[in-house]
Amino acid sequence: MKASKIAYKPVGLALGAVSGVVAGAAFKQAWKMLGHDDDAPDATDEDRTWSEVLLAAVLQGAIFAGVKAAVDRGGAAATRRLTGTWPG
Image (cartoon, rainbow, N blue to C red; front, top):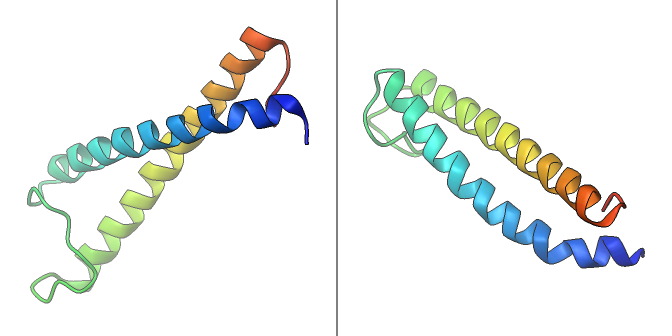
């Protein structure tokens, strides 16, 4: 395994935690903008419809994936600028 890849591991973990927090906040805002309650439904929430539960899950997954990809890509690009090597 390349040294740059090993050195990037802690950075990647920290960026992953940050991206989770950012994605969670973005999802809450998106859910509110769609005119829903403050809390998104859980899959086992008896009082919510199938469509509402599935919409929340799909939206949350898309936001988390997009934010994670953007943060990971930005972290890798910053690492290349600082070290001259791509961490992947």
